Image (cartoon, rainbow, N blue to C red; front, top):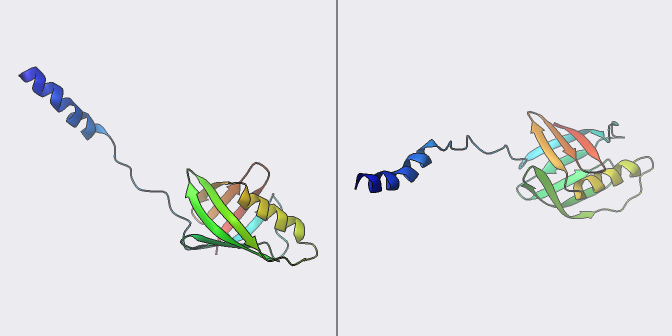
Length: 129
């Protein structure tokens, strides 16, 4: 009888040894960001990202991008993205880079008031507004 009780009590004892998670990672929801670098270079003009509950609005200084977003295993999953279609002299390269970055399921690293996004081809450094 003692052996049966010990055998049945073992899972409960082991469950007590499991460490509970200390909390969840901070969410990007309801945050506003200023892009400080795209692919290592400062942006031409103001570039921003705004996260709301399930919507993202981004601008690289010319067009506005918008779409749904979610965080998944340290990655930022965005899309589909919609965009205005204006031409802005001197800003189109960074516009394409930001669009490609957001569509490339970038790794998202949040550290205090700094956010880093990195995909296979592009990266961005952001500061909380």
